Length: 89
Image 1 (tube, rainbow, N blue to C red):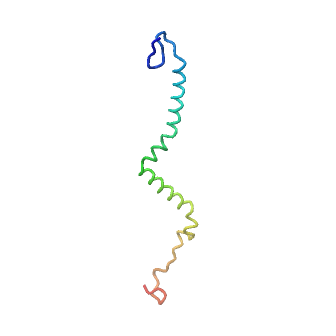
Image 2 (cartoon, rainbow, N blue to C red):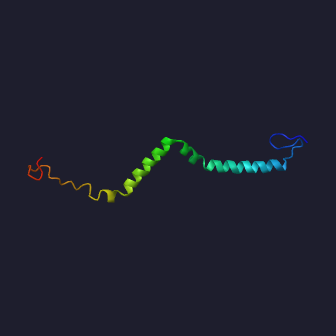
Image 3 (spheres, rainbow, N blue to C red):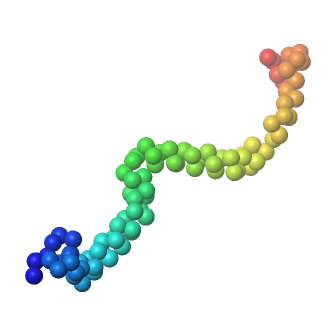
């Protein structure tokens, strides 16, 4: 009985071994496509560095009230006052 590459014999029937191989191939393809992004990110060093920078910026934004507890509009520095011994400039 002659078989072709796609698992179909000369009579047009699909062999049982080809369906088992096909199901194994589709499950491995599905599994590899799920992790393709992660593998690709690990291989790209610039992408990892960019994600780390973005994560650091996000953490700074989340913890900003603890890092700078003063209100941004609180700017009473007395810049137009005359020089004194405490502030010579």
